[in-house]
Length: 344
Image (spheres, rainbow, N blue to C red):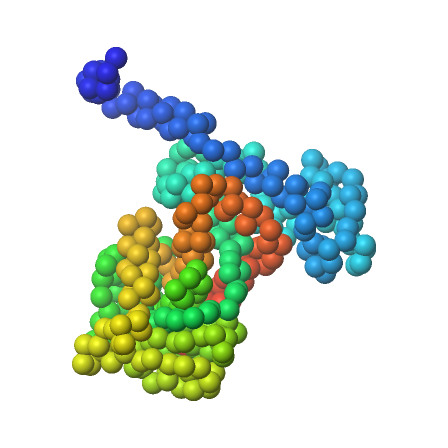
């Protein structure tokens, strides 16, 4: 039977039967998706002595029995025991048999509603799992920037998506600030990348950035002898480059200077700005400022893995390495309050 004939037959079904058919097709698609095996990946890392104690970070430990189906280990340094899930985003999850299927749907960027329907889990559970996973992506790349390095800030409107905002009217997606220009209603994100593979995406402050924001974002990744900084002519970048004692090529937007000496520009960074915003708006219909850094970390890892055939497997292997994921997840609110305090 050809595709057109199938469409005709489906059109004869009732709305209820069409919905049931769609659900069954979703399950078949899920079964045919690549198996990411998060639990097996985590145990493989520990059994091959590639992990560390989640309590003291010591690399030497031994197997120490089984705890409700989970492999236990004992650290040779602090003598404390832990399971294969301790500290990771899988710690405390009650439906670990659905973890792999969840990861497949998440990497396909399915909505929370579709994940809920496919896995028969609560929408709040689907939301929490996403952010626990993203909390494990805080350290995806910390190499120094080398060669010509572009840096520029972009702005997102402060969002309290999912909550009733206090002190102002609710905004529709794609709304604008009640004030003109860049102001304290905007979240500044510093994007820095070199011409190789180095990339940093940092939620820096509310409103205009300062020299200290740039230093906090990329100061530790600047190599005095190997980094050439390209940016706009903002005084903060000039001060940062002077403090770091690095070569700096500012581009003067006021005279529409786009390229300097045919090689110094920030066009790669501006392209990244556009792709980030399109991804966040199209895939998620915008995200709350509270979780913006987590989504930027996800985007960064997507960029690093985009030319790899085993993206799903490498993504999972990256997430199960972090034994501070739960700690990072619980610290999201604290980091958000620190960011909001810069509005004052």
